[in-house]
Length: 111
Image (cartoon, rainbow, N blue to C red; front, side, top):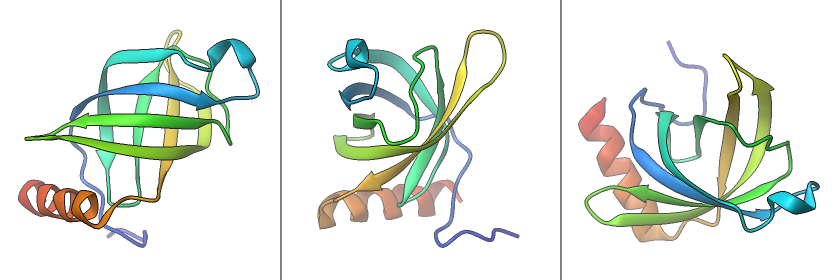
């Protein structure tokens, strides 16, 4: 049973991300490719990366769906995971209605 506001699916969806804002200045502008979600909802997502992202960092996300879905999100949680990877939780900000619709449709298909 899920206790979250919106349903999450555990699925590896490919995406890339760009660091928009970070307390670590050298991370700003970094583009990360070859990423995959661990879980996804209309509110956010979870993924792993080698970059040391921290809470309150802002990232641009390009989810590779049938069409690329562009989103912006805040890192709400970051913790070390296996090896040199960090587990990153992102909350989406300002998704357009069409992007929300695409996510809801995808999540419905995967649930």
